[in-house]
Image (tube, rainbow, N blue to C red; front, side):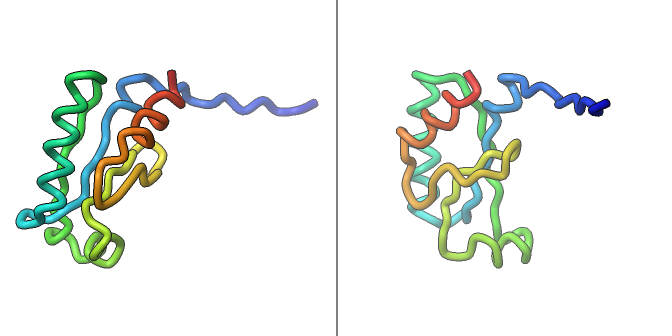
Length: 96
C-alpha cells in the first residue's frame, strides 16, 4: 500500500506577496519600486522592501545583484537589477 502525501494548497494571497531586496540609497532599487507600484495598477500583488544592509547574510547573498525581486513562497528569484514585467507576469500566472 502506498502512503499518500497531502500537499498544502497554495493560496493566491501567498503567491502575490513578494520581496524586493535592496539598499536605501540605490537608484536601481528605487526604479524597481516605482515600476512595481506602476505594475500594481494592472495586477494585484503586494511587495515589501528589505534593506540588505540590515543583515550580513543578505549582503553576502545579494551584494551587488540588487535590487532582487523574489518570491518568499518558492524562494525563486524573479528578476534583478530591473523589473522584468514578463518574468513577474509569468511567475504570477504559474499559480492562476
